[in-house]
Image (cartoon, rainbow, N blue to C red; front, side, top):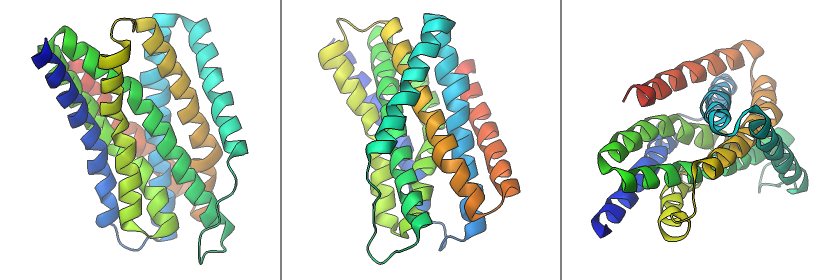
Length: 252
């Protein structure tokens, strides 16, 4: 049993590190220009909208039914609205551009959303691995594949607002590390009590958080910095990337 626990935690760490791979984009993109920013934010929104509705909400509905899935989705919307309302505006040293200020806040909110999203994922990988390690390995690989664009979704707005590669990478990387944290929580605290219903409720809640972030922050800022056409191209690209990632998850 001890060996299975260590293997389960190792798999959640592997899946979380994939977010860091996406975060490395900060070290490879040049000084951001506004057109690139618009396209990238659209891509980030496409990733998060698709994951929120097609993956998280759909899986929650299958377990909870439409009524409870809608309830927890709505709770996620309200929770993140209150958080967004209560967080004070951030004034960055040397920057007076209010849009850069809002962009930075958008990156922080995106990072929070994906960090929360990774917690139940880490729990899922750990619990599946404890049940059947042979099943846990492909599940961890599939989750790692779709964690890479989530790291990009965290990193892009932070880097474009601050031009600080290291800070953007570290914050995005930290969002991925909640994946193994979820595994630790599942093994140490929740394993005797956790069930599919609770995981599904958490998934619907996180779906609401991610969708709110996209429509309140990512898409409006992308349109303001570039053009609606570039934003829409980015959204479509994000959809297609996640279609491939989730398709791989479905087929293994």
